[in-house]
Length: 112
Length: 115
Image 1: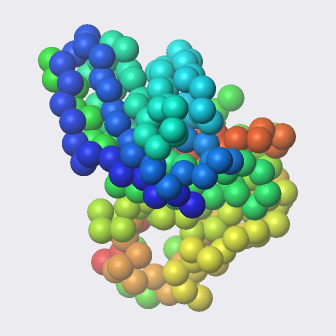
Image 2 (image 1 turned 60 degrees about the vertical axis):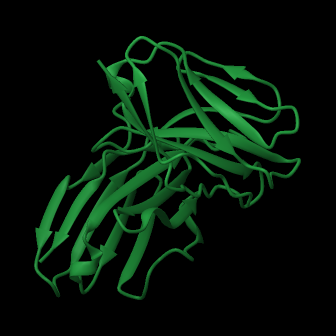
């Protein structure tokens, strides 16, 4: 599986956009980029995933560079409840690939 | 839907005792995962089941750990005998069938303390 690199921590002002970067320079053609987050004392929560096109859902947007070596998760209007550890994970689909391997993630602190 | 249900939420036990953690998956989900989270090692996959069959248990630390899924609505993770280094938060997660991607739904976790 491709390895991901994320900054250990970031700050964001409440109401502003939070842009969380992830490097995955060894990603292969059939691997997707997933984002999960973990709010303190809770289990991880799925946010979004994508292959090569940008994706948007009710929680966030995912921007993947054309060469797919990096991506950015965007929370358009961060709130205090978005304070969490955000994990970027790269996985392929299908077969015996149900495993998600969580790294250390980015601790996003949303400031009032 | 109540989501993934785990019990107990907190468990404190003494070294050498047997510990059993329980998980009830979301109805209809056919993949189930057990994870362990510690400060030192982060979030680790221990074992996962597909249609009640263990598929990959390579993350199970040693023979003291065992997991079962006797039916589609129940799974257990047992530690016997428990040791202080087993202290961690244990999460159960499930995934629906047919989805080609990896959206896993996590339970609230069981915080285990072994004294």
